[in-house]
Image (cartoon, rainbow over all chains, first blue to last red; front, side, top):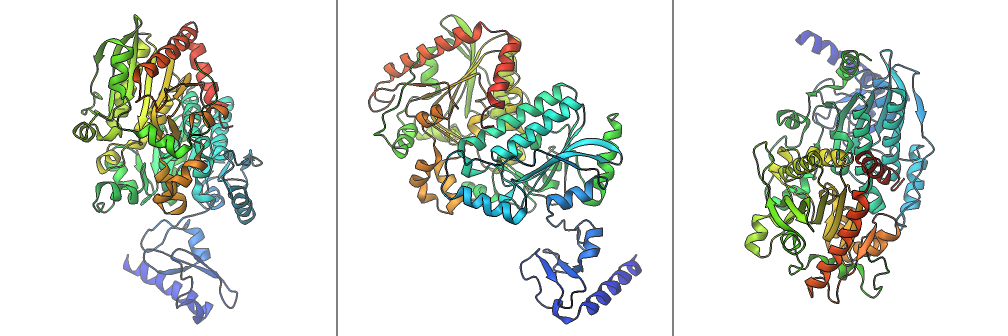
Amino acid sequence: MSDFFKERRKLLFSLRELRGKNNTGKAGSNAGDRAGEGSNGVSSTVKCPRCKREYPQMLMDRKKMVCPKCGYHLPISAEERLKFTIDSDSFQEMDAELETVNPIHFPGYTNKIKSIQNQTGRKDGALCGTATVRGHKLVIAILDHSFMMGSMGSVVGEKITRAAEYAMEEKLPLLIFSCSGGARMQEGMFSLMQMAKTSAAIKRFSEQGGLYISVLTHPTMGGVSASFATLGDIMLAEPGALIGFAGPRVIEQTIGQKLPEGFQRAEFLQQHGFVDAVVSRDKLRSNIAKILTLHCY
Amino acid sequence: MERFQTKKTIDAYTRVGLARDKNRPGIADYIDALFTDFFCCRGDRIGLEDEAILGGVARFHDLPVTVIGHRKGKDLEENVRFNFGMPQPEGYRKALRLMKQAEKFGRPIITFIDTPGAYPGLAAEEHGQSQAIAECLAEMSSLKVPVISIVTGEGNSGGALAIGVANEIYMLEHAVYSILSPEGFASILWKDASRSKDACELMKLTADELYKAGFIEGIIREPEGGIQADPEVGFAGIDKCLQDSLQKLCALSGTRLQKERYEKFRNMAR
């Protein structure tokens, strides 16, 4: 086994040399940030925020952005999530055009949304559509943490609801990857009501015999965890994902003490009976396919 | 049922103060004043009892109903005992149990909302606060009996909504209902809880604003100085509102009630 790691190290060091010395120092000073193109344009690198090692982008892509050394699951975009989960070229997007109307006329919100839309190329924080996973057709929804922390406003709520409704009509299984800071404050009561709306839609879907696989990824908090995200028939979570109702800071302030190590992490939820399995990213696809076949899809 | 414009002169921040006033009637007062033969039901049947939610069976003008509400308590000792009206997951599980029971016996459900929010604590997370609330939302949406909610004080976050997926939602004139407490809102958006006054104005949390936006069915008038100044007047208003609403909803079939409730929330904030 140790030979295997030695080989891997050698490979990595050779790649680093190839890139030149610029990337050995403090490249990508923000933890978890992907460094840009190497100075000589050969390849970009990814630094693991936990163990601080750097790896070539290509290697990390193959590893689905999981640190090969320490197993840390780096945050990924909705597109990467899609790529890592479904059969290639099987995705057909739904409701891409929905965008918010700033329902409570929150100052500055419209401009903020516009600028994030320009950065991300997406209208709001959810990517929904149909796809196949190992040949099984399903409805998939992915929350995007880069869009206002994946927070649920009227658009995210509507898209999740429509995804559940479409899955019900077409008798397809529903797969949702949650990744959210919670309800979107800037939409006030309109955000809160998405909790009821999405939960009701999931309930209806469930009553029609639909299978809903919910995957909790880092982080899944507040209004999202307290609605559709925790209503799955099958509950999966990625290792180390922070999952809970109240944020750790709020709890610490309320109870006036430090939280124990591992509190609100995926493994903690499994231990307390709220997820069926903590599944590492490289095994998610095969697990999802297995669950689908077990439910005769 | 009063459907009218509330007095503009009272700003949102003042209303939050009125809604939180410790002299404001609580769930126990409403039960005493509006219902008879109350039988208190306790426990989540899993192993815990949470007194931040008070619930049971009672008569409303002879009609057996299930009553559920957040309980804050009258004095400090009670506040501590009832955790200032902030439920733990077991409280929501008890509420859900009572609602399913009401459905079994065909009883209408009346909920009274008055909470700073679901409790953010160690045990609450260990016992699955998120899951308990989500379950309430999902199950309430499909109940086949009339559900009426009245926001009597402050209704904050999912902790309030968890017992508020109703066919009809009413608010007392000075009650507030919002995504989060104004302090929490300010803290998340500006990292400064002391800007809660600014938050109040932006959040659109007053009964009047929520009625205009279509979130609630009506507003129940309060006497000058709030319901705390002259509770009897307020109770009479709630009584009238509940009678009218029940009369209307009890005429509908179970499936119709379920369908209408679903569609109400489906079309809300679309």
